[in-house]
Length: 205
Image 1 (cartoon, one colour):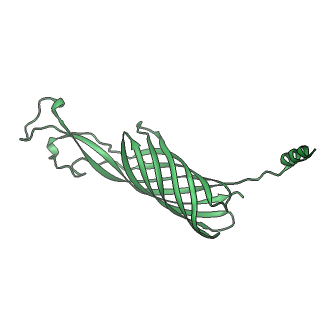
Image 2: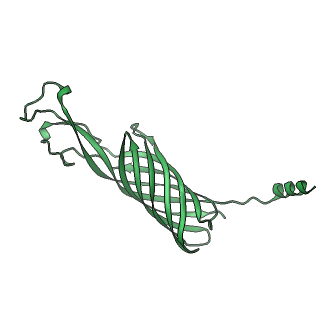
Image 3: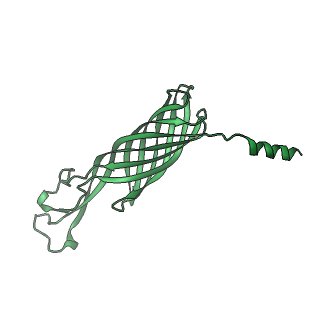
Protein backbone atom coordinates (compact mmCIF):
# COMPACT_ATOMS: atom_id res chain seq x y z
CA UNK A 1 0.00 0.00 0.00
CA UNK A 2 2.82 2.37 0.89
CA UNK A 3 4.47 1.73 -2.48
CA UNK A 4 1.21 2.58 -4.25
CA UNK A 5 0.96 5.88 -2.36
CA UNK A 6 4.57 6.78 -3.21
CA UNK A 7 4.05 5.94 -6.88
CA UNK A 8 0.87 8.00 -7.00
CA UNK A 9 2.67 10.94 -5.39
CA UNK A 10 5.43 10.85 -8.01
CA UNK A 11 2.97 10.62 -10.89
CA UNK A 12 0.79 13.47 -9.68
CA UNK A 13 3.58 15.81 -8.53
CA UNK A 14 3.82 19.06 -10.44
CA UNK A 15 6.82 19.20 -12.79
CA UNK A 16 9.87 21.16 -11.63
CA UNK A 17 12.01 22.94 -14.15
CA UNK A 18 15.70 23.48 -13.45
CA UNK A 19 18.39 25.10 -15.50
CA UNK A 20 18.42 28.13 -17.73
CA UNK A 21 19.11 29.54 -21.18
CA UNK A 22 20.98 32.63 -22.25
CA UNK A 23 23.03 34.47 -24.84
CA UNK A 24 26.80 34.91 -24.87
CA UNK A 25 29.46 36.83 -26.78
CA UNK A 26 33.13 35.95 -26.98
CA UNK A 27 36.34 37.50 -28.22
CA UNK A 28 40.02 36.70 -27.96
CA UNK A 29 43.09 35.58 -29.85
CA UNK A 30 44.59 32.26 -30.89
CA UNK A 31 47.74 30.90 -32.49
CA UNK A 32 47.95 29.13 -35.85
CA UNK A 33 50.98 27.57 -37.56
CA UNK A 34 51.58 28.66 -41.13
CA UNK A 35 53.76 26.40 -43.25
CA UNK A 36 55.71 27.61 -46.26
CA UNK A 37 58.64 26.54 -48.43
CA UNK A 38 61.95 28.13 -49.31
CA UNK A 39 62.39 27.64 -53.04
CA UNK A 40 66.07 28.60 -53.32
CA UNK A 41 69.38 27.29 -52.01
CA UNK A 42 71.53 29.19 -49.50
CA UNK A 43 73.02 31.25 -52.32
CA UNK A 44 69.60 32.34 -53.58
CA UNK A 45 69.60 30.11 -56.65
CA UNK A 46 66.21 28.59 -57.59
CA UNK A 47 65.87 24.89 -56.83
CA UNK A 48 65.04 22.72 -59.82
CA UNK A 49 62.61 20.36 -58.05
CA UNK A 50 59.85 21.13 -55.57
CA UNK A 51 60.98 18.00 -53.72
CA UNK A 52 64.08 19.96 -52.74
CA UNK A 53 62.15 22.88 -51.23
CA UNK A 54 62.81 23.35 -47.51
CA UNK A 55 59.71 23.43 -45.34
CA UNK A 56 59.54 26.14 -42.69
CA UNK A 57 56.82 27.52 -40.44
CA UNK A 58 55.85 30.56 -38.42
CA UNK A 59 53.31 30.90 -35.61
CA UNK A 60 50.69 33.58 -36.17
CA UNK A 61 48.55 35.15 -33.44
CA UNK A 62 45.12 36.04 -34.81
CA UNK A 63 41.98 37.57 -33.26
CA UNK A 64 38.64 35.76 -33.11
CA UNK A 65 35.09 36.65 -32.03
CA UNK A 66 31.73 34.96 -31.74
CA UNK A 67 28.10 34.85 -30.57
CA UNK A 68 25.94 32.00 -29.31
CA UNK A 69 23.71 30.45 -26.67
CA UNK A 70 24.44 29.19 -23.17
CA UNK A 71 22.48 26.39 -21.47
CA UNK A 72 22.74 25.99 -17.69
CA UNK A 73 21.90 22.61 -16.13
CA UNK A 74 20.90 22.74 -12.47
CA UNK A 75 19.19 24.96 -9.89
CA UNK A 76 20.22 28.59 -9.63
CA UNK A 77 21.39 28.03 -6.03
CA UNK A 78 23.59 25.03 -6.84
CA UNK A 79 27.31 25.59 -6.32
CA UNK A 80 28.06 23.36 -9.31
CA UNK A 81 26.16 23.91 -12.57
CA UNK A 82 26.42 22.03 -15.81
CA UNK A 83 27.13 24.43 -18.65
CA UNK A 84 26.70 23.90 -22.41
CA UNK A 85 27.79 26.45 -24.96
CA UNK A 86 26.96 26.49 -28.66
CA UNK A 87 28.28 29.40 -30.64
CA UNK A 88 29.50 30.68 -33.98
CA UNK A 89 33.10 31.87 -34.01
CA UNK A 90 35.02 33.71 -36.69
CA UNK A 91 38.81 33.47 -36.99
CA UNK A 92 40.58 36.35 -38.73
CA UNK A 93 42.45 35.78 -42.02
CA UNK A 94 46.04 34.62 -41.94
CA UNK A 95 48.81 36.93 -43.09
CA UNK A 96 51.73 36.16 -45.39
CA UNK A 97 54.82 34.45 -43.92
CA UNK A 98 56.83 37.65 -44.41
CA UNK A 99 54.27 39.75 -42.51
CA UNK A 100 54.21 37.05 -39.81
CA UNK A 101 57.95 37.31 -39.21
CA UNK A 102 59.64 34.99 -41.68
CA UNK A 103 63.32 35.76 -42.26
CA UNK A 104 63.21 34.29 -45.77
CA UNK A 105 62.94 36.97 -48.50
CA UNK A 106 59.50 37.26 -50.08
CA UNK A 107 60.72 36.29 -53.56
CA UNK A 108 62.18 33.03 -52.18
CA UNK A 109 58.94 31.80 -50.59
CA UNK A 110 56.34 29.41 -51.97
CA UNK A 111 53.24 29.44 -49.76
CA UNK A 112 49.47 29.48 -49.58
CA UNK A 113 47.55 30.94 -46.67
CA UNK A 114 43.94 31.62 -45.70
CA UNK A 115 43.11 35.08 -46.99
CA UNK A 116 39.49 35.12 -45.77
CA UNK A 117 37.94 34.82 -42.34
CA UNK A 118 37.10 31.29 -41.19
CA UNK A 119 33.67 30.64 -39.68
CA UNK A 120 33.18 27.66 -37.36
CA UNK A 121 30.41 26.30 -35.16
CA UNK A 122 31.60 25.35 -31.67
CA UNK A 123 29.89 23.15 -29.11
CA UNK A 124 31.23 22.60 -25.58
CA UNK A 125 30.01 21.02 -22.36
CA UNK A 126 31.45 21.54 -18.89
CA UNK A 127 30.98 22.82 -15.35
CA UNK A 128 30.69 26.11 -13.49
CA UNK A 129 31.91 25.63 -9.92
CA UNK A 130 31.22 28.37 -7.37
CA UNK A 131 34.38 28.96 -5.35
CA UNK A 132 33.56 31.98 -3.17
CA UNK A 133 30.77 34.53 -2.89
CA UNK A 134 27.14 34.88 -1.87
CA UNK A 135 23.68 34.69 -3.43
CA UNK A 136 24.19 38.03 -5.21
CA UNK A 137 27.65 37.68 -6.67
CA UNK A 138 30.19 34.86 -6.72
CA UNK A 139 33.44 33.82 -8.35
CA UNK A 140 33.68 30.53 -10.23
CA UNK A 141 36.04 28.06 -11.83
CA UNK A 142 34.97 27.27 -15.40
CA UNK A 143 35.92 24.33 -17.62
CA UNK A 144 34.64 22.84 -20.89
CA UNK A 145 35.52 20.21 -23.46
CA UNK A 146 34.14 20.36 -26.97
CA UNK A 147 34.91 20.79 -30.62
CA UNK A 148 34.59 23.08 -33.59
CA UNK A 149 32.43 20.59 -35.45
CA UNK A 150 30.82 22.81 -38.11
CA UNK A 151 33.27 24.17 -40.69
CA UNK A 152 33.28 25.06 -44.37
CA UNK A 153 36.87 24.00 -45.03
CA UNK A 154 37.04 20.67 -43.17
CA UNK A 155 39.23 22.16 -40.45
CA UNK A 156 37.42 20.71 -37.41
CA UNK A 157 39.33 20.67 -34.12
CA UNK A 158 38.94 19.66 -30.46
CA UNK A 159 38.79 22.23 -27.67
CA UNK A 160 39.56 22.29 -23.95
CA UNK A 161 39.16 25.47 -21.90
CA UNK A 162 39.58 26.43 -18.25
CA UNK A 163 39.58 29.70 -16.37
CA UNK A 164 38.08 31.98 -13.69
CA UNK A 165 34.60 33.47 -13.96
CA UNK A 166 32.11 35.69 -12.16
CA UNK A 167 28.31 35.51 -11.87
CA UNK A 168 26.02 38.36 -10.78
CA UNK A 169 22.35 37.79 -9.98
CA UNK A 170 20.54 40.82 -11.44
CA UNK A 171 17.09 39.53 -10.42
CA UNK A 172 15.73 36.32 -8.90
CA UNK A 173 15.91 34.55 -12.27
CA UNK A 174 18.32 36.63 -14.38
CA UNK A 175 22.08 36.13 -14.10
CA UNK A 176 24.90 38.04 -15.74
CA UNK A 177 28.15 36.11 -16.18
CA UNK A 178 31.64 36.47 -17.54
CA UNK A 179 34.84 34.45 -17.66
CA UNK A 180 38.33 34.56 -19.13
CA UNK A 181 39.59 31.17 -20.30
CA UNK A 182 42.68 29.56 -21.68
CA UNK A 183 41.61 27.34 -24.58
CA UNK A 184 43.66 24.60 -26.19
CA UNK A 185 42.78 23.71 -29.79
CA UNK A 186 43.91 20.41 -31.23
CA UNK A 187 44.01 19.49 -34.92
CA UNK A 188 47.17 17.55 -35.79
CA UNK A 189 49.08 20.03 -33.59
CA UNK A 190 48.21 21.79 -30.34
CA UNK A 191 47.59 25.54 -30.54
CA UNK A 192 46.75 28.06 -27.83
CA UNK A 193 44.01 30.59 -27.32
CA UNK A 194 42.76 33.06 -24.70
CA UNK A 195 39.11 34.09 -24.84
CA UNK A 196 36.73 36.24 -22.81
CA UNK A 197 33.03 35.35 -22.56
CA UNK A 198 30.19 37.58 -21.35
CA UNK A 199 26.49 36.88 -21.32
CA UNK A 200 23.13 36.77 -19.57
CA UNK A 201 20.95 33.78 -18.75
CA UNK A 202 17.40 33.27 -17.53
CA UNK A 203 17.01 30.58 -14.85
CA UNK A 204 13.78 28.59 -14.93
CA UNK A 205 13.50 27.68 -11.24
